[in-house]
Image: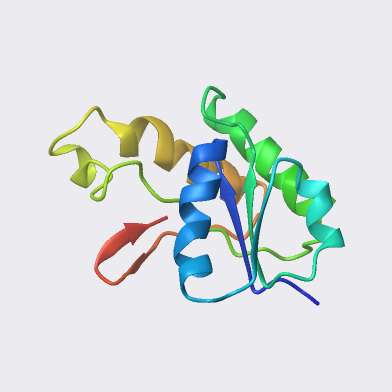
Length: 127
């Protein structure tokens, strides 16, 4: 079975936290520490710890690209979300998360043609 949703998180806690709503909804969901194991599951929802928190945006994009390849996902659609609910609101508050981390990651994804576009979901920024 092909996964309907693959969540790539920056750490194990994030991977587990992102999986919880799907488990609570009754969907078979698995959490992985190694993206190559995703190919071996039948679960429609998987969440993977990429351990990218301390990487530069470019390194995180490379790790994400490798994760997609090793998981057997050829044409991913990537949504990059902020740590806080507003992702800095274009610099109005916070520590510049959007300008310093998110936008460089989006630009790097776009240069590598990784299926990442800036959009919004339910009024909240998804990059």
